[in-house]
Image (cartoon, rainbow over all chains, first blue to last red; front, side):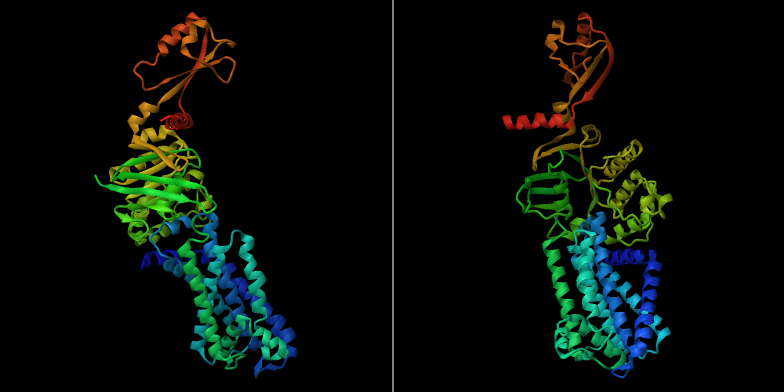
Length: 253
Length: 310
């Protein structure tokens, strides 16, 4: 393993994050606060409790997941798309590194940033509602796995994208709806039975459900399914990336 | 001397058809400077991209320092530094950080004084904390060179290093190239400028349409190829060339008062003295003179014709 290379990519990418530190931290804090004002206070005051948890607290895991997923994708895709866009990718491709090292560097940095934002949101949420975390280790593991797998997914989008429009396409048109409809702001038991079945095809449901279980001990779907879903998604992304580097798809001529 | 870089029958066919390289073979000794000349689209950059791992080859093999660039890519690539043709740098990044990334990518620790040494050598040390977008074009090119040298490569590729570069940087660049050669670094550069190749390279390779037409010692090639044009700017326009000058096979120039004489710049006797005497005889007055080395394109035309005739 070329550890120096992994370290160099990781630190280079993290430096990008810290250059835009205000944007990186202030914007998630602000948007989380807005969600609390709108969903937690304005609407939430008319909803009693969901599965024994106050609505304000109930949406916290969903909110963290929402940001973690969208941030992981945008960081993961931008991290690799930008070098492609400005041409600096030549250096990474001509360096003595294999795809595993490249992925650890880029995806590691993207996931780290998303994780940081997740934690910031958790801290922000604490100012609005009382949060209990029943299974802290599982909570960390879920968050970590989610950040990693979606950063991997973002990395694939970044390699696939040929322009900035395409870079936004998948996150906006597919991921955002999936996340919003994935039970971030409601329990799927609140839906009519037919929609409950439809929802089960949304992979994000499993992530939010598992993550929520780590907070309150209640879940929409069995915990095992949540774990399986996230592991399967990670494996799928890893396979795709392995194929991309083996064939040089969209990165080599 | 053993070959530092060995290219054997390298082929590149693009998926949509079209051969970028049609079986290129080349051997370059350690410490040698080779200039690759060729028109746009000849395959120069494709060849470099294949050697450096940016492009996949359809057939053939390449070794660098005895290491196959595919099977033993880590060992091969550690030896290679690449200065690309386009200025590809992250605009918001700082000079020192980007050079540090380069050194790290090639598996070396970032903080050991080497980066300072390289930045000082390229007159970039004072700019080390500047964001790249604030640098001039010439400075950006220096950063590219610094990045390529960050891991102390043994083989350096310079793809069109002097395109759009000012005189000072051009001079600095050739000083650096000579320094590197003195340290035994092998250098492969591509250029459009034959003067440059002539001044710096030990050997010149000419590539056209994906094929190496010839690889020759620079001096030998220049002797063979060095056609020069003497442009005579006359005091008055000439419609027809006077009989007294008919045996000089002069041509009309761009302006009505210009005549062009083509000769072998390396010849012992160019005939210019006698031409001047004949001009005087013909009663033509001279206002100005310019000479021009035959352009690469003209050399190409000559070469390709020769290839066709052979």
